[in-house]
Length: 90
Image (cartoon, rainbow, N blue to C red; front, side, top):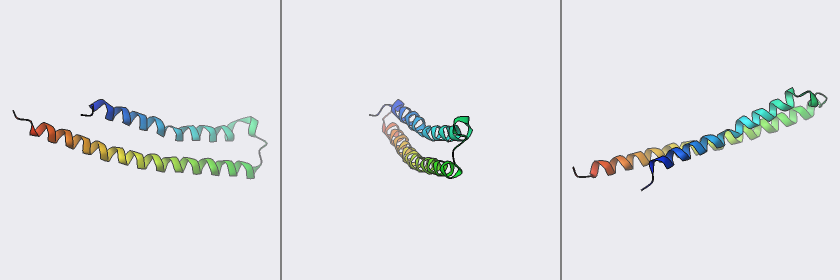
């Protein structure tokens, strides 16, 4: 039988992966706020931001789908455990 903790380990791993979108925000802010990039052309800045926003949106979608799958399997897992517990003789 699966240990109950593995569900929570998987949950934490998924949440850790999701932090990549925070990293994308960090690098985007870096290009906007760091004085080193002040001379960047508007066209280049727009192109970079559009690419970072697209990557962020892609990962948000992928992580949302993954999270939905996790929730479904977690519900199935808990239903299975409850069914096993309910079947045990007293």
